[in-house]
Structure formats: structure tokens, C-alpha cells
Length: 395
Ligand SMILES: [Zn+2]
Image (tube, rainbow, N blue to C red; front, side, top):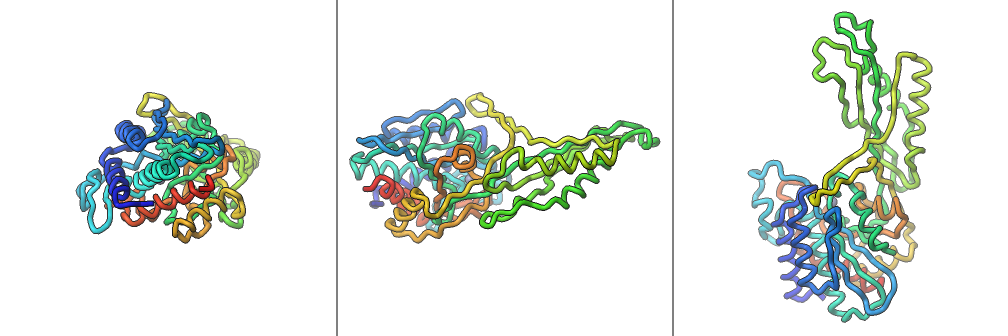
């Protein structure tokens, strides 16, 4: 299916996306570039939504299932440009690799999805029953699964393919992630008379000790529901000769399948209640961190930082259809799960939509200096997406 002409187009598309820098919240140029390519590649329609996500649509001649391919279009920033072998936005090709920020996370994967869907439409002359959508999604790097809500609301997919790199394996789940905030409230005093105040940091130190004794939840495939301190802040800061009256610590909690907002906070709340009973000067509160991000369209996205985990059965019909499609495309995928958080948190974790992950390249190339994607991987990725479509639509 990948003729020489198609290979050239695919490589050119990947380079073009890399040449449009797109840190989270600044994805406008790359969204426009993708929209233009949807039009050039014969998509039936395409649009940019209020958050700035760009969505292309191919309609089969008959009606049937709707499949969505999801790839985020934001990247992490480039901090030390001078250390790069090639310009991070050059899309330079060297020794079979395309270099640039986002090449492996995930402009390469998205290019492969965009191209594969259009080649499938061309080869079948759209004689298939259903709809194909490819979405370039904003704000994944800092707020996974949140901008994706707008897309699933609009198109209501039956199946989702997350394109994050899986080294060409088939992913059927991931741990989720929650950001938990604990606050302690003390009483300010001059540090020459600390006994007149209540030191909020001392109180927090006790909580931090105790919280590490909590037993993590366990899932036999996904591992532990780890809880780890990631930052701490006191106020006033700096505290010149003053006992701090406030302290806030953030914990990262890895979420297992089925864990809910309330069930995750419960053991922490119980611990705090118990500690407050023993120490009447302790005043502590637990909640989820709330994130607010501004989209390049001007729209604001707000939400609690709680991104659920998910896992499907290997025998699930969509998993099996995807597996057969990948095999027929000449790949040899292992069925496994992601070790990091993706937009699947929304589709599968929040909405229960059948979701898999499949993408070319190695996940450890993401966010690195000299990020690249091998052209061979890019091509195999496109073959894989094409194979999934053939299998899902029985072509
Ligand atoms: Zn990514």
C-alpha cells in the first residue's frame, strides 16, 4: 500500500508538522498546516474546534462504526537549542531519521495516521461502512485527556486509537494519574517567639512522614497506585523572621483501573482526621489540584487533575480486530500497556469507549535533545494504521 509516491508524501508531511513549532497553548500554526493537509488528501470535511483541536473526517459510503485516531499536536518546549545536532524545527533527514521536536511525540505518528486514513479511503474508493476521524489534539502534554473531551462529545466514536509511540506494539491500557494537594494552616508568629504561633511546615512534615506509611493499592497487571510527593511550598515566602502560617504539598498518585476520585482521597482524609484528633493545633485539608490552561483560540480549559486508568481484555473484539489488522500488515505486536498517561484516560477511563494504543517509534525518544523518528518506523506505523482500518471495516 505504501508506494514510493506515498512514502514521499508521508515523509514530507512529517517534516512539515515539525517545521511548525507547537508548544502547549501555541498550536495554531500546526493546526492550520494539518487542516490544509486534510483538504489536500481528500478528507470529506475538516474543522478546528473551540479549543483549537483539528479534526478531519472521511465518510464511508455505508453507515457503521465510527473510529477515531487521536494524536496530540502540542510538544514540550526546546530549552537548549544549541545542543541539537540539527535545528529542532528543521525536519532535517539524516541516516534514515527525521529530526525535530515532536518527531516521536507525536508528529510522526500523527502524520502516519493522517496519511494511512487517506490511502485507505483512496484504495477502497470509500466502499466501507462507517466513519473515520483523525484528530490533532491540543494541550496533551500538560493536561492529558481534557481537550479530548470536546472531540468525543462532538463525534461520539465507537473505537479510539491512541497513536502515542508503542514501539509498534498493541497497548490495551495504562495507569492513570491524579495530583493531590494537601494544605496545612498554621498561625504566624515572630520567629523569636515561635511558641506563639503554629508552624504550618512542621505540621506538614508530620503528615509527609505518616502518608508514606499508607499502603498503595495494587493491580496485578498495572502495578502499584504509587503516591509520591512532587513539590512543597510555604507561605509567606521568603519567610524573614516569621513562622510560616501556610504550607501546601502536591503528591502524584498513579491511578489503577476503577479508582474513583472519592476512593483515592478517602484513606488520606481518614489519616488527616485521625491526626487532627490527636493534635488540636493541626488543621489540614486534602483536595485535587485544579488546572487552568488557555488555548491558542482564547478558550480556557479548567478541571481537576484526575485522569483515570483503563485496561481492556485481550479478547475484546476491538483489540482482536486491531491485532489481526496489525498482523496482516506484516507487524508482530505484543499486547501490553502504556507506562505513561495518554488521552486514553479520557476516552477509555472517563467515557468507557473501546480504546487501544498503537504507534511507531520508541517512547524514550520523547522530550529528548535530538528527538527523531526513523523513517522505517514511520512507514511501519502507517502500514499498521492502514491495517487496523482494513480489519475494523472488513476490507
Ligand atoms: Zn505524547
